[in-house]
Length: 79
Image (cartoon, rainbow, N blue to C red):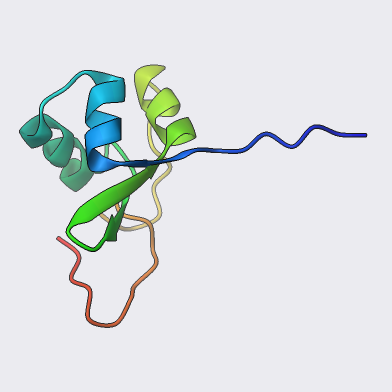
């Protein structure tokens, strides 16, 4: 029997609290690609494992975008 570990999805506010940083700093890191996130409505969604990767100082995998997951929803605008 294997144990499946869930990866928590955090909101912008939860991620800011987890990292103990301000909203402008959080958004700057997302736009620079230092933190991978996806736009969801007016906020962002971030995997907790992504924040742990960021805190360990590991470089985000490059996939040709500016820090956002490559999932486009019609009508949603990526920054």
